[in-house]
Image 1 (cartoon, rainbow, N blue to C red):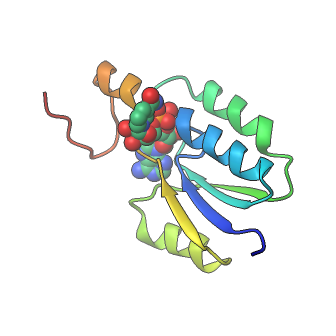
Image 2: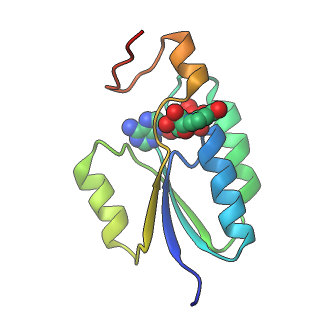
Amino acid sequence: MGPMSILVTGCAGFIGWKVSEMLLSEGQTVVGVDNMNNAYDVRLKEWRLSLIRDNPDFTSHRVDITDRNALSQVVDDGRIDAVINLGQPGPACAKAWRCPTSTTIQT
Ligand SMILES: NC(=O)c1ccc[n+]([C@@H]2O[C@H](COP(=O)([O-])OP(=O)(O)OC[C@H]3O[C@@H](n4cnc5c(N)ncnc54)[C@H](O)[C@@H]3O)[C@@H](O)[C@H]2O)c1
């Protein structure tokens, strides 16, 4: 089987970036999506992306996954074989109670 084209949401996040990097190192194609929200310092997200941006098998889109039209455009633009959905606040964000998405956190 040839390389897969994998949509990774939250590709600039702690987990999404690492997953993207690992997939790329295996020769897979990664279509990354992230809204680059400011739940924590955006420079950290930009730095992560800078480490994988030059890989020709990686494309990234600044898109909010709740924006159906924008997301459809990304998906329609190319083949997607699988989706890894990590575009959600992680533990650090949840602790800070600063999650800018519509996610509800219950204690
Ligand atoms: N970090 C951990 O230790 C850990 C452990 C287990 C599970 N997880 C899960 O992994 C997921 C990601 O966690 P993380 O630690 O990488 O968090 P993170 O905040 O570092 O990464 C999430 C990324 O998603 C993006 N994002 C958030 N909402 C979005 C939206 N609506 N549209 C597009 N992009 C959006 C953010 O900008 C961010 O870059 C979460 O579901 C978390 O529960 C994390």
